[in-house]
Length: 213
Ligand code: VGL
Ligand code: ZN
Image 1 (cartoon, rainbow, N blue to C red):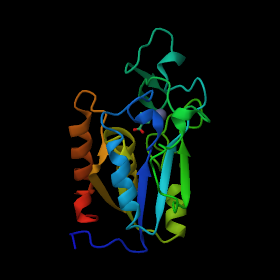
Image 2 (spheres, protein in one colour):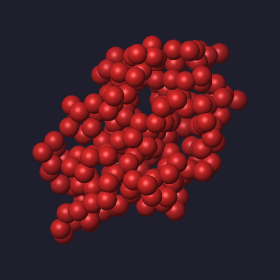
Image 3 (cartoon, helix red, strand yellow):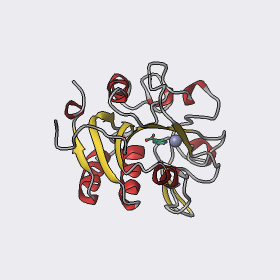
Image 4 (tube, protein in one colour):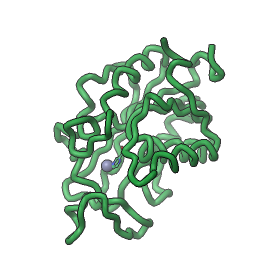
């Protein structure tokens, strides 16, 4: 077996934001985003514990460019908690775009963490909102269930996977990023920056072949 070993009952697969809006044809499509679906499904076959995240914004969310006069998609603004990229409207609560991709097949997932549900603040990370302080509850859930090592896959490598990995490490979870089970937006070099930051913080980067055929 690989350097990370066979997943055990203290490991969890965290499948990040595999939603229609992040796949081709969606409102904030990640290039090749749908390529992660079949890999995530196969990974699900080797993990007893699976948690999903779902980007879940109210209409007029402050991360939408349309909530800020004179702004365009991918501009940024200063928020009370720091700089915020402004996105096309995406993953609006209850919309088709916010649904998980129909091809995602992880029925044994035990928890869905919805994030970005408060209008004034975005949440890239599955652990903390973008103020870096407001918890989603995921760390408590994982600790109570004695899940100590997190394997990440999903969308987007350079945003929600990136910040989830850094926060997982901050919360003292062993953190493994399955690189080919993620896809990036790659805005102005953000993929390289994210990969370096995750490595430097102590994430183990692997390929899915270490876990599945
Ligand atoms: C994401 C930008 C805005 C992500 C979510 O899932 O990476 N990126 N909302
Ligand atoms: Zn979002």
